[in-house]
Image 1 (tube, rainbow, N blue to C red):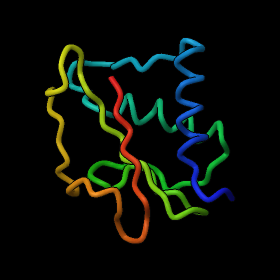
Image 2: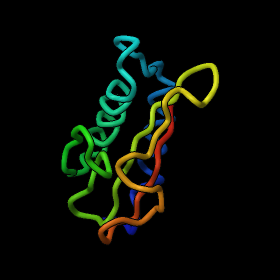
Image 3: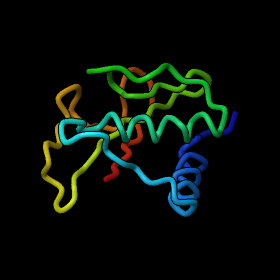
Length: 106
């Protein structure tokens, strides 16, 4: 296992966007779950083992074989203020022995 997965995960996100796999909300009430589902596919592409996302969990994805996690935040267009929250945990980048990477998308 590499010392960090973040570069590979970021690359997969870029490749998905370039391939036209865009993040699309299924409803106006769906704040982040469409983005979590999109991001989860990137982790699956890399065959990374993780504990699945759930409502009100922090981080959204905790890797199993590496002390890292990913917190996914969906943002609306236009503007950044559409209900952004960090109600689960104050964003610090480190939680329960894991390095946490924040992933913002819209």
